[in-house]
Amino acid sequence: MNLTGFICFLLFLAVVAVISIAKTRKIRLNTTAAYFMGNRTLGFWMVGFSLFLTNLSSNQFVGENEFVYTTDMTVMAWGMSSILAMLIVAEFILPIYLKMGAVTTPDFLEHRFGPGLKKIVSLIFLVSYLVTLIPTILYGSAVALNGIFHIDDALGISYFSAIWLLVVMVGIIGCCYTVLGGFKAITVSDLVQGAGLLVGGIALLWFALRYLGDGSMLSGIQKIAGSKKEHLNSIGGPHDPIPFSTLFTGMFLINLYYWGMEQYIMQQALAAKSLSQGQKGMSLACVGKLISPLLLNVPGLIAVHLYPGLTNTATVFPRLVSDVLPPIMTGFIAAIIFGAAISTFNAGLNSSGTLFIMNLYKPWRKGAADRELVRAGRTFQLTITIIAMCFSPFILFFDGGFYHYIQKISSFFSVPVFTVMIVGFTTKRVSEWAALTGLLFFIVTYTLSQFVFPVPLHYLHVLAILFVITVALILAINKWKPRDTPYTARNLAVVDLQPWRHRYWFFLLLVAGMAGMFLLFSKAGIAG
Image 1 (cartoon, helix red, strand yellow):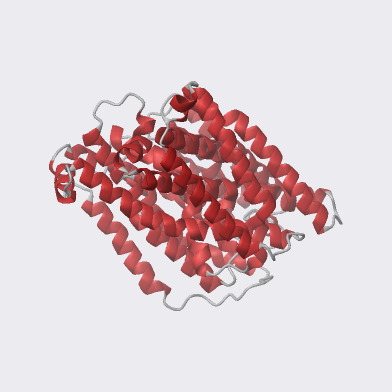
Image 2 (cartoon, helix red, strand yellow):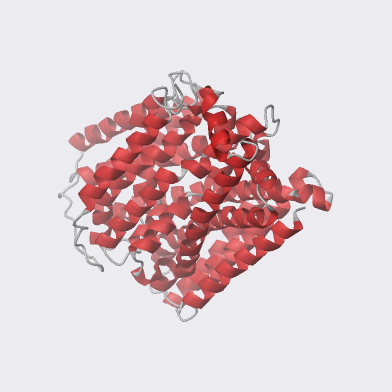
């Protein structure tokens, strides 16, 4: 084990914890607004860094660099295409949530359709977090930390045992942040870790490229650009794992769902002090997505040249960190990766508690005081953590790769909910019964297409086709039995709804940057 690096790792974590405690020690967490939403006081810096860090978990450090090592840069499409999705959310969807004073995204379903659909979608979210989000965060962070510090070798235990030990450690620390500090403590730590991520990312590339180039950063860049060009291409063909055409079908739908309807993501923007601050925060997160390939993909490209023929490809990123960085920087990078994992874990845990308490427990316990609701939320979060810690180490045995597990399983929950939400946003007379029928139809048919009657199409194209069919089904049912009265949106806003004046110019620059990144990593660019 790298003892110096491990000590630096612990010191950086302690610094973040101390800053979070100092900034939030006077905040009382005896109300649901304070515990789950930070009293809606977030400025755009906190919104932006929280969105970016919540999305940027250790799953991506491990999974995307592994994908680049084994395949190519096409995995970059997920992050780049999410920029356009975020801008659409900031312009059209965020104002709807803030106008109705939403605490959770399913709150819209209750206003638009009725309480039944809200409860069902809340349950789908909770199952999704328990099966995919929280376990994969714990597993990904454990893989990364073991790859950097070689816990299995240091303690003389098996790889699986080391993963389990680290999963428990990450789970306990993350749970303490959420249960003891609440939402505001999470966002403060995100701000500190985001600054650390920028410094650490630049340092990692500097050392890794110099290591590859035998002391010369320029030689390292020339090696990447001069050979094994097949790994540089981000424009996937029809038979690649991520065809470029999927950007315009299922991937676009998933990204819109993720950034505009996924509770653990949207909760960061819903806590903004105004619509303007929320839109600025989402734009800041887009800037982060533009530069994220430097951490999520380029290390994988460097590893292609350093480690040909790796058997356990999930260790690509942590091995690179361990090999190329001096001990102090190794601990610093490990702390950043750990912080990114904790950020996403905290957001998932906090959102799980919010969904359970506000959408399920509170309607059942009518008249319950805020103290009881907060106490029940903490108990639920502890339970979720324990269950996830027991399950997540077994992802090691999933056939098909870690990143594939995340994307494939999450699709069962995302686009069906997205379909119902979009119908709700764009129609006035569709009934709750029609929406519920469409939701169940989508889930059942997608499951059949993947496991019972395999369809010879990429699963992202299947999602897009089912989206169109399901919308048509819902509208057909609506013709037969529409809602009695048209839906009328209510203004229950608790924040200023004045939009950001200069957003369109900034949005245009972000879209141009997104297109430029695809051009750079293509056969018309450095992959040619």
